[in-house]
Image 1 (cartoon, helix red, strand yellow):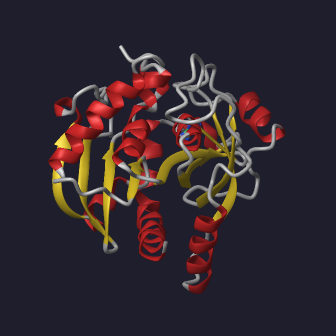
Image 2: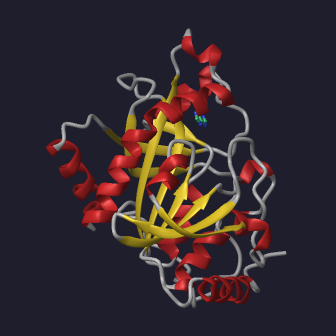
Length: 277
Ligand code: HPA
């Protein structure tokens, strides 16, 4: 079991195992392939792929539509490590398990993280299929990933969250999108534990609280990355909107279908970021 007391040793052990596999090569980026970015693997010149089950201390992914493998290879000329499949809190993992891969990334020497997800749009101007650059988040998970004894080898007890998503990375992507006439949104992502989709009243609550989109992942990973002073870029595909008519159809299959449709745009923006930053 992962605890704040053994996390550093466990993550170090896993980092050593993975660096052994790469022959000591340190990836420049860690990428979490959520719904909407799964096929980014097609853009990666894959060098090796390791199932989570073979990685010491790694939890195993269970959710439908998510595979559990770690991919090493070259994307836009840079060596990257991509997680095909993430760990969601609603699956029953502890927060230490959910965010374990980010701990491992940092201990491998990775300082840049890209996270992607599918989310429900609550901003009234948003439409299904929109791609949203995450500019900030609201943590509404019932448990905090940094709760418990702090290990200063990772970072400070009290973490500054004034820039969870790198302004520089956002600028690079926005410049590219504008130059290539790619339509995008920019907004605030609110993370809830799920696994239920929100009621109409809950979507309203999310909007009133100041978010543009809501989902069930990402926020814990980003908090832990910021604890370790990583630079983060986040991108979300709006797969449903809280229109009372449309909302009735929201289900996992719809979410995956809409996310897949937007994948080419997300992939292009991520390739552009990795190439330029
Ligand atoms: N709510 C929460 N998570 C989601 C949604 C949603 O509407 N869409 C995709 N993931």
